[in-house]
Image 1 (spheres, rainbow, N blue to C red):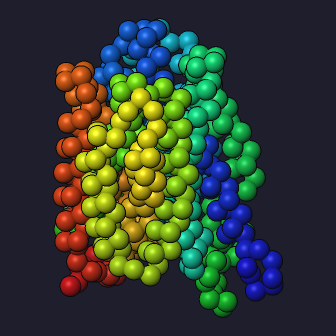
Image 2 (spheres, rainbow, N blue to C red):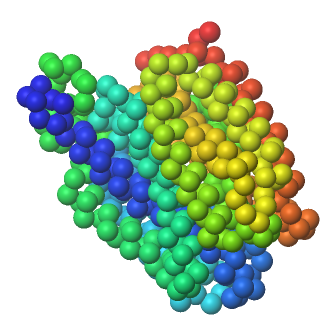
Length: 425
């Protein structure tokens, strides 16, 4: 609340960002639902469609640091509007496709670039500009929207695909993006200073200030990467977050439904389980944001990755042709852990690299997340094509999660200096 008793405009911006993240995430639910029907209609192998998802995930990550810089140059609202239109276009054009390269262009290039512009760096920019107090909690809520939006679309898309075909399912994602466009145009604002106010929780005597203008977004993003790459904390965060991407979007998000289908479970049932992951993810990510304001983020990340690795090691033994209580327990735990890693990772980037460079650095860290996801999406599909089962992919991911837990605990405490980040024990 503001000192006058009225709701601070930061909450309206947060609400618009929440809806934008949900709308942009709609397509990210599509591959798991559409891969099997596309395989049946066109005869395209899982590895080919996994490659389309890999391009999407790769661009989703690589666009993040550049979109953060573009938002500093052209404004958050303009970048968000263009991104939503790209996603809508990429989701609509496939209804006319007949060749594999068209799938790569639509799923990979158009939607990858659009969703990348509205990825976690978008959330980092918004929370960094609009919130001084409750930043961790708001980051958790918005992160949950980005991940949950991907999963809550699943039951509806699976039903549409079953009843009306995959073309109806993909059109829904395009429509969801277009519905968010007027909300962004009206309610999303670039910074508190643009409407003559200060961030939520800022001192009452603070003077509204505009964020520094970035004249060369590409150069700024690359220079930030060059400087960050000189520090051990960047590589520890990037490496652990790459494993995060492998074990979530790349493996479970893309291949859970086909893996369950291999064991006789209907696709609609498997989609419902992933939707439950999204529901539990809301509570888990918000709780993680609350904890990030109070607990050492390194210990949070170590706990999250260790628990995720254990759950993935058990998952192959839980698949059956129907939903057993053990699978419900997996869904509960995995949902709580799904993107709980994001708030503490953003906090560590801000602590090590400062409030100005932190969001761009996180964009590069998030790029590593998506590189990991892209590798897993293709590799898991290849494992399935060659071995007839996803079991090995789940076991490898479990071992990598144990490595990620160690990497996070190896990060030293630090704070930014005026020149460049210096780690301090």
